[in-house]
Amino acid sequence: MIEVTESAAEKVRSLLDVDGKVKTHGLRMKVVGGGCSGLQYQLSFDDDLAESDHQIEAFGVRVFVDEKSALYLVGCTLDFVDSLQDSGFKIDNPNASSSCGCGESFAA
Image (cartoon, rainbow, N blue to C red; front, side, top):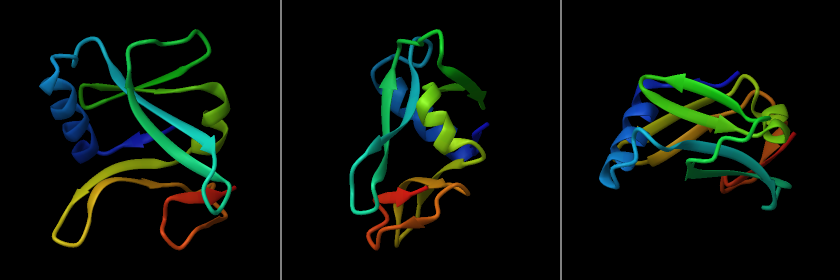
């Protein structure tokens, strides 16, 4: 469903480890309405896995996706980039038909 790169998993693990939550929490990926193009990604840490959620395990971390968001995230790749020009989580989504100039939102 979603591919999580080793770099992204390492960053998630390090952020969760700061609060001692590696074993109890995962990263929740969600698509919500908003932004210039109509849809935005939302990333947060969560320990509440709903029955209808999809769970992906990669490189020792869990990623949760609700059923509605899964429709927009199928086939995407979550990466973490840390370079001189760019830093942060990056989502490569083949379902996005367009995105805004700032890269904060997309249309599907």
